Image 1 (cartoon, rainbow, N blue to C red):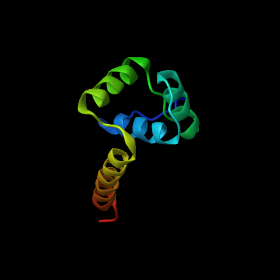
Image 2 (cartoon, rainbow, N blue to C red):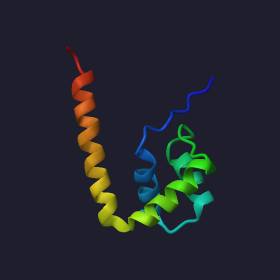
Image 3 (cartoon, rainbow, N blue to C red):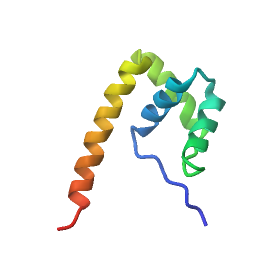
Image 4 (cartoon, rainbow, N blue to C red):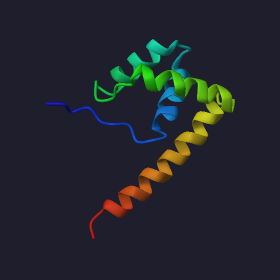
Length: 88
């Protein structure tokens, strides 16, 4: 049985930033750390990871400031979705 979760679009950037905030890592290390931190529910395919890293680099995204911005957006989104999915 496959309990792994597909990442919603846009989530990968947030996960990469969060992982890199813990310590600098290369691509494989990022992938392994996300898998470990998610109790093996999330796996980042190399075909997705490296394009995402290049995209972050092109955007100039790095550091804790961008992570805080992305985390804030994620919390707002998940709260709104939870509100819609909540009891009717």
